[in-house]
Every structure is written in structure tokens, then in C-alpha cells.
Length: 278
Image (cartoon, rainbow, N blue to C red; front, top):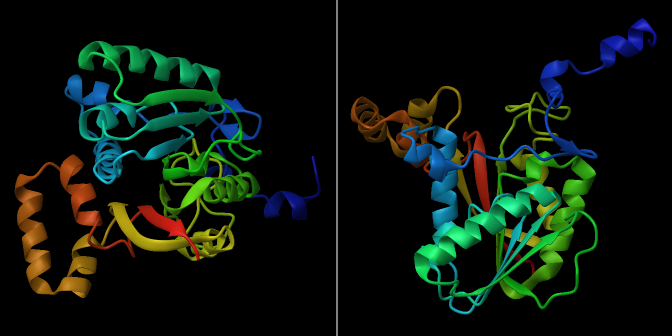
């Protein structure tokens, strides 16, 4: 049972992955919602809209003939937007630790092939632990690592970043999204299907150590309160009045992500756009 001092020092439940979360070893393999299916059924959630926007953001920035690696690709939610907006890439490689996730991705590929008359680029899916050494491929121009980094323990997450950085071309870009959770570790988890949540102050140093330079930081979800005051502090009273008007007419599921992009310093989730440090 442990002595009273040890028990008192242990973090509470809000700091730990929820019991019953699907796990493979120390990793949470709970997946993000299928935002395509949710919207088709009339369900709009801030997290779903956030995930759609960040996947579209990446697709619109893929250069011609790019080789793209999707780190912890899950059920292949990046793929529909690549078929539609980036058919000019040359190759997609999806990596995931869970065979069941890759089976879902294969089913999605079959559906997309039927819709588009085949795949416009090469697709490979591989079951692997992204924190361990990757297979030897030629380098990637784009790395997508969205809403998955927080499902790895801290040290495995750091290893996965080093592997991702090593797999990029000299001019490659990493698009990494993850919650931005304040305070020093251990941190109270925003979502208890996660294993370890980061804060910008900690993660920026880890990215630098992995050989990555942050080019941009984009807010994806607003804080639980104080967004109007943050907009005022950065852009003046007019921005707050603009936001208050939008609150009256734009559903929060759509407004939340759009407004958060303007104030990443207070956002609850961030996307880091990174290149290899030279």
C-alpha cells in the first residue's frame, strides 16, 4: 500500500490516463473522432472541426512530388484531403502501432479509390512503434504528426521526434499538433485518454534538441476562458468587439478554432510548423 507520505505525493486521477483507455504497452491508442463521419451525421464538435482544419492546412501546403509520412496515422484521416487537394504528391507512408487502425485506413483507401478512380500517388501503410528505429526509406518532404504525440509517454515521444526529424529532407516540414497544457509536470490532463501532455515552454526545447526549428505556432483550440481579453491584449478593443459579434452568429464548434489561431499564446491546443535546423 505504501506509506502515507508516498501516497500523498502520488498525482491524483486527473493526472493519469483514464482506466479503460485502449492501450498497447505504455501507449494510448484511443483515436480522434472520425470528423468526416460525425459531420455526415450532423454532429459538429470543436475538436472535430479543429482536426479537419489542421488536416486541410497540411494538404494545401504539400509541394508537387512530395513524399509525405503520416506519423501515428490512425484510421487515415489525412488521406481524403490529400486525394482531393494534393493529388500531386508522389507518395504517402502511414505509420501506426495498432494493426486495427491500419485496417481502418485500408478500408478508407478502398473507398477513396472507388470515388476517385484510383489513387493518384503511392500509398504504403506500416505497423510500427514510431519511438523505435524506423525502416530505411528515402527522406520525406512532409511529416504529419497530428493529435497523437500526447498518446506517448514523455521519453518515447522525444524519441519519435528525433526519428521524425531524421527522416525529413533538408527542406522538409513537420506539422505537429498537441495540447498546450500549462504548469510544470506532472500536468493535469485536458483529456484523460492521453498519456503525457506538453506545454510550449517544455516542447520548444525538446524540438530544438531534436534538430527542429519552429517556424510558426498556430492556435487550434481556445482556452477555457479569457479569449476576448487575449484578443484585446494583442489586437485592441476592435478585435474583442469583432469576436463578440461572431459569437452571436457563428456556432462555437466552428468559431473556436478560427479565433484560437490569432492567440496561440493562450490556446489549449497548438500546431507547430517546424523545419530541420541548419
